Each structure stands twice: as structure tokens, then as C-alpha cells.
Amino acid sequence: MKKVSVVIPMYYEEQVAETCYKKVKEVLENLREEYEYEIIFINDGSKDKTFAILENIAKENERVKIISFSRNFGHQAAVTAGLKYVTGDAIVIIDADLQDPPELIPDMLKYWEQGYEVIYGKRKKRDGESAFKLLTAKVFYNTLNALSDVDIPKDTGDFRLVDRKVIDVINSLPEHNKFLRGLFSWVGFNQYAYEYERKERFAGKTKYPLKKMLKLASDGIISFSTKPLKIVGGLGILSIVISILILIYSLLSFIFKWNNITPGWTSSMVVMTFLGGMILVSLWMIGEYIARIYDECKGRPQYIISKTINIEE
Image (cartoon, rainbow, N blue to C red):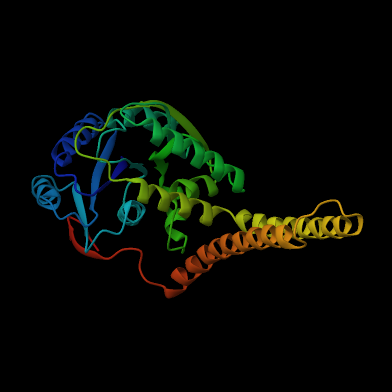
């Protein structure tokens, strides 16, 4: 019998942990005639009652497995850890807040049985999200796809059902800072966009404030594009051309006495300011890439596990 693994990262989710488990379990129990199942919860360093709730659940149901981090390592690290321990043939990645309905899993399994190897959720409607978040998400995906050589579907998150062989490929990738939704596009395979309406968060607050959204955007762009460096080079050439044009204009202005402005002042200030800004922006972009290389070279683990429950090492 085939097996379904559901990976659910959790960070300060004491308000939704029990409800999330019950809804996911209900869906999977209805599939028991066709599929075995396991649920893997990853406690991403929560300091509230999240782990205690999950621990009690795991004691009652041996199909529930728990991975608990020593501290908060981030959403992508939590999902990555879950993918390392899955034993199923089809793997579902879903958040705990129930914005992505577990009730969609049976439909996604039907597409998987038809031969699709990655069925990713594409949001056609997003309830309960601010205009600012919707706008920034749109800008992010447009910018990412403009810069990247890989087409990453718009209006998607990490909610998806993935075939085991795709997960094996993802797990084999050695990079430290993984932008998973980009990697699932990069590896290819037979993919299907499953459209759905994303619900409002069941309870609690979003764990993706502006700071984390910017970090995710940075990870996505730096991981899948070197075009920012090429843009810097293009802007450098442009600044040289502009400087030459200003020089020519200044010489002609001096020869033909076109104006009475103090010679050299305007052109010097414009060029110095423009080039100074370009240099600082260029150093910032290059620094981001160097920092990423430095981070990878250190070879530190992406996460540290402090405790596991119902998991065979």
C-alpha cells in the first residue's frame, strides 16, 4: 500500500496545533483504504506550549512524528528537516495555520496518480491578507522571474504534493540556504498547478513579518540569479558613458561659453554623487553574494535537532 507523508512546520502555534492535527488526521483517515500515512510536525524552536501539545498527540498516535529544533532556524529549515525524515511515496508540505486546506489533499493525490510528480498549490484568491502583502508578493515574484533563469510560478507558496523521487533529489542538494519553492521549479519533473482559494488564518498571527519576507525574497533572488551582478556591471558602464558625456559638455561649454556656472562644480557634484551611490549599491550586492558563499563554506548544519519522537534514526 502506498504511503502519504504530511510535513507541517510549526512556530508558536499553540492556538492551532490541536485543530491542525485533527483536520489533517481526519482527511488522512478517510484515505486509509488506499493509503497509509504519517504526519511529521517540526517544532521550530517555539517557546510556548506548541511542543507539549505535539508531544501529547504523538503519544496517542504513533503515526505522528515530532522533530524539535534547539532554537528557531526558520520556516525553510523546518520544512527541509521534515523532508529528510519522510518515508512516504507522496509527500505533502502544508502550513499549520490552515490557510491551505488539508481537504485538498485527496484531489492532489488524484493528480499524482495520473503521473504528475509535483502538484503545487496556486492561489487564485487570498482571504485575510492585506493589500500591502498582496502587492509585495506580486512585486517579489515579478522581480524574481525577471532576474532568474528558472520560471517560478506566481501566487504559490510551499503548499504542494511531491513524489518521493523528487524529494530524494531535493534532499541530495548540498546547499545550506534552500529556497524550496524555487528548487522545486529548478529540478523540473512533471508539474501541475492546482488552483485553490486560500483561506484566512485560523488563529494566531502570521509568522512572516516584513523582515522575514525580505529575507525570503533575498534568499530567492540570490539563490536563483546572478543577474544583479550583471546589472551592476551594466550600470557601471552606463556611469562611465554619462561621465564622458558630462566631460564633453563641460569642454564645449567652456569653449563656446554657453553658461556662467562655476566651471566644474555642477559636473563634479553630479558625477561624484552618482558614482558614489553606484559604488555603494554595487558593494552591497556583491557583499550579499560573498556573504552567502561564506555561509556555505562554514559548513554549519542548517538546523540542530534537540529531540525527536516516534522517529527511527
